[in-house]
Every structure is written in structure tokens, then in C-alpha cells.
Length: 338
Image (cartoon, rainbow, N blue to C red; front, top):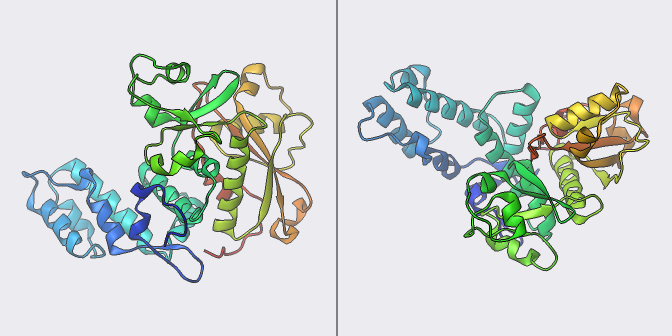
């Protein structure tokens, strides 16, 4: 399945098949068993027979139907809730030919599943989409689709580091960047650069490389490249995306906020409100999107640019919502190729 160097081994892409027609990912029994191995679903020794029975039966046949009365028979309330979520998630994946189709359906219908499950689904779809990619900057930018980032100004640059990596560590500093991000002396974190980008593949599952998102630099351009790939992969629509350096005289005929804060900023600009300096400082990136084929766009917006906005919270955290690229673009409603 892998055409180039491997990365994100922990997402389980090796356990999936690929549809030879559309290139989407196909669920396998091995992939479902990986969910069953999660600690939340491992019954303790004193668990009731109903809980042990469900897990044992699914390890033997992961697609085996599980009825609501079977789950209701589980004595522990937390275990019942975990199994309800797991079976609902499994059934949703199995109801679709590919994982891409399952993702599109849950976004379009607004289905509610735990962030953890959805983020893992986004990661494995990205892993499929980026198969063979040799640009470490795009791979690192793609992490932002499924892992929140903590941003900081460092030596005049806006740097994004993985929020879980930063938040899970603490202690004394080792370097200015480590100090700024609150990492302990034992932690190693590097800003991705041309000098160290070849190390990305070996450490991709550690999520310990930061990305420079300063306007005009490579990180934002890489994020735009990932967005273009995501749209092409899910919608079978080709677009060109370029970063916009300044938020000046930008005609927001149509805009998509890629996170809640960016959406609020876009709404304010749409309504003609002035942005104070603190709000402007939270805008991380602005992109102009153009469709290769005008026929892909709803008629009233053909020829008009679409703007994409990225912003951090007041606490300098960025959590992208890639689902907004499914529901927010002004594209003709049609079945995608996935």
C-alpha cells in the first residue's frame, strides 16, 4: 500500500485495504480489532459475563451484530456507554464502502461521535491521501487537521507545537523554545526546517516537531497545499490555494473559517465590524482559493475568490475543523468520487 517512506504508523493504515476504483480506504477485520484492543474496552477481571461475552465474540468476528439488549445487560454503566459508542461507530464505518464516505456522511449529517474517534478517522484518511508525499512540511502541516496546536511567538516567528506534547510535559527549560513552550529538560522539540526535515519520518509518531506559521514562510504554504489535497481527495475537485499576507481590502464574498475563532472573525468582517489589534493578532493565516473548473462552483459565485481563514484562541490554541471544508465551500451539490 505504501509508495514512499512510511509515517504515522500508529494510525493503523497498514490494517486497511484500498478500493482500487476510487482509492478510498476499506475497513478490514484487523482494523476493527484494533479498536477492540483499546484499554477502555478491556473488561477488568471482575467485569460481568455480558461484557466479557461481547468482547470475546467480537474478537472472534468483529462484524458480528450486537443488539441493544446485549449492551443493556452489561452491569457497569461506564462500560455500557463505551460499548454503545463503539458499536455505533463500528456500524457507521461498516455502512459505507470507504472510510472517506463514512467521514463525509457523518459531517454532512452532523452525527455526534467522540473527538478521539473522528480525529483518528481524519488522520488515517490523511495518511491515505498523502501516501508517497515527500514534503515533510506538508506532512507536519497535515497534523494540524487532527491534533490541536499551541502557538507562541519565538524570536519574531509564530511557531506551532503539538498541544498534547506541550501540555503533557512540564519542568525546567533547556532552550528558549523549550522554555517558551513549557517543556522539560528531557524533552526535545525542533522547529521543522530544511536542515532537519529528513528526520521527520523517523519521529512522525512522536509529534515533537514544531512548525513555523509566520506569514510568507513555508509552513502556511504547506498548510494551503494540504487543504487543496483534502478538497481534491474528498470532493474530486481541483483548486489552487495561495496564502494572503495581509488582511487588507479583501472582498469576503465567501469565506470559510477553518476553526471557530476564524469563523467569528470572518463573521465580524462580513458585518462590517472593525477588528481590534488583539483580535487581528489571533488571525494565523488567510488563504485565497480558486476553483480550476468554474462549473464546480455554485452559479452566483463563479469567478469570485473564496477565502479561508485560520485563527487561534485567546489562549493561543489552534484546533482546525477540516469538516468545514466539507460543509462550507460553495460547491455544486453532487456525489463525490469517494
